[in-house]
Image (cartoon, rainbow, N blue to C red):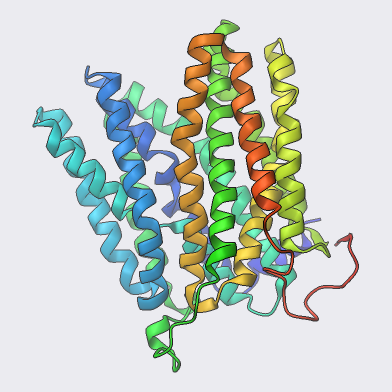
Length: 409
């Protein structure tokens, strides 16, 4: 089963940049939680903690597309050290401002700087895989599956470790974890120049900037937005469900079951030679994500919810892998990081409204009905996906067969 993973990781330099990127993107699972743990751990309000976290998230969403464009044009080796240094300044400034009791404006400015400067490592590493495995579509699919699995691992390990450090050692330790992993990890990734995509300004055709296929790219960002809303709503609903079951400390375990299902599905996806187009798989995946949310409002126990979330997780990684694969095939190589970053921005932008709407339903009607918000996000994603042409993101002739189906290899 793991032959394909061994094949892609055997490419020169591949395992080094993938492992380094794992460390470099740990902060994305830790930063906002670390802000909440810092602020509340020092006796400040949850309102301030939430506002500072929102400032970080909004800034990160606004800047990721710009960073993606700069990474494509100037190269990872040049851009990554600059932005990660700014991220470090922002994090240190935020911790200092909160601990020293400086004006809240200073803390907000620091949080905004940290969010705006944190690099889109997920986009960066996927662009590297596309470059290293150019012309080998099935291997790229496997590499993207590997990165999706790593994403899930990060979101299981990172928050747990940050919470333990911040509650058992010091309130700033969660953000400290983000700092000591993100900065050296990003610098080490930037130092691996041999596997980075060729900067567009360094190419012979740099005088002509390739056109971005905006209509399908923006449509995929819409799908990502709906998925982000769904994920956030389901997460908030699950925490509330655990609280209603008098088992709030086990909310993390339920969410870990969700991630575990996605990890398993991601690993399997990487072993399959897909003949369906990426867009067809996005349509199928979003439809399944909507379907698996239907039973959630009717689940009545922690054990049953754990099983339901584990099964529901199986639709997550394959859908996201297909989405990023469509971008990889449909966007000009010189703008690939930017294209992937746009969908990442869509995912991030959907988190706040999904969580907020689920919270409103929880306050008025309880946890179980709030899962309908997640169901709505899945339905929205499936409907938006129908607007996509299956010809977008189709690999060149010869990379895939013409018959629908799949082959396990």
